[in-house]
Structures are given as C-alpha cells and as structure tokens.
Image (cartoon, rainbow, N blue to C red):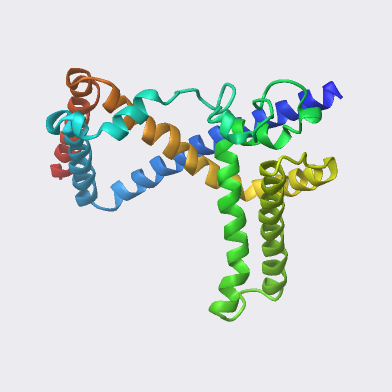
Length: 258
C-alpha cells in the first residue's frame, strides 16, 4: 500500500514537471513566432523595440506613483510563497484544500485519510486548472456544433466531437462529485477516485497545453510583477528598466538599417 502511495506521489510530481516542460515549449514557440514576425517587416522590429521600452518604463511606475496606493497587491505579492513546481509543485492553501478535520495534503497515509484528491489539488495546481479548461473546451466542441452548425470537415467529425465532449463532460462531473463528497466530509471511494484519475489522464493530453499557459502566467508573469513590487526603484531600474530600454533601442536601430 505504501508503494502505491509513493507511486501516486511520483505521478503527481511528474505531472508538475510536465507542466513546466510545456511552459518551456510554449515559450520556445513564442520566440520562434517573434523571429518569424520580425522577418516579415522592419516595422515589426521597431514596434517590438517600442514595446520593450514601454514595459521597462511601466516597471518603475509603481515606485513613481507610490506603492502605498497598491496595498492589496503589495501585501499579496510580498506574502506569496515562491515555491516552484519543478521541485515539489505549488503547495498553496493546503488548509483550504482540505475539509475540516482532515490532515493537510502531502502528509500521513493518503489512502486512509482520503487525501489523494487533496494532494493532487495542492501539489499540481497548474495541471488541475489546465484540465478544467481542457474539459470545458472539449464540451464546447459539441455545444458549438449545436449552436452554430456547419458542414463537417471530415466524415466522422460529429462522432469524434461527441466522444471528446463526453470525455470532458465526464471529467467535470467526476471532479464536481469528488468536491461535493470532500466538502461534505465524506471520504471518496477508491473506485470513484480510480475513474477520476483514469479520465484525468486522457484529458491531461490536451490539458498540458493549458497548464503550460497557466504556468507562464502564474510563475513567470506574476513572478516578475512580484519582483517589481518587492524591490526598490534602484534594483528595478538596474535589472528591469535599463536593460529593457537598451534592448528596445537596439531593435529600433536594427529596424532603421537598410
């Protein structure tokens, strides 16, 4: 039994690493897309340089306006933990993820405490949010076909739409049923958990793309904003503003070359 719990923990950690790899892959695709966009026209290079300079100026905007005008965001970003998913995954709000009377996820006997879903939620947040978006997108395949009917692109399109939509619908319903059981204090049955994680594995094929996007937003974009709010104007100027202004000016000079 302990071996199965260790395998489950390794599976969750593997999923969190996959979200990180998906984020890196999406970032690489974005860089390739930017290079392709640059090659299309010198005007695009000039626009990108101006955008970098604008971001550099905006980085010092909180210090110029006064960070006391953003008490909520300053307190939230200063108090947020910066634990990365590449190590043990985001362990956020463990108490909120566990119903009253249950131990915090990630400790104790997972099976006897009914903590499998809580451990998944607390340590694999990006993949969970990605699967929610992926399931909603799968359900929308069928809804879109009903709301806006159009000729099929291939003979079995409607069949595949129904199958994929049923998969997303099953994941959403199983997830909501597990949440209802946990919030009511009931321990989810092993069979229900097995069905959920089996469907979750298939939905995760599409969910990994959404998880990569969410990882970029949560840990890279918000992490950059947290750095700006948690550091003084001198560090922000030296590390963010001046490099962005210099690189932006460099791209503008390239755009002027024949």
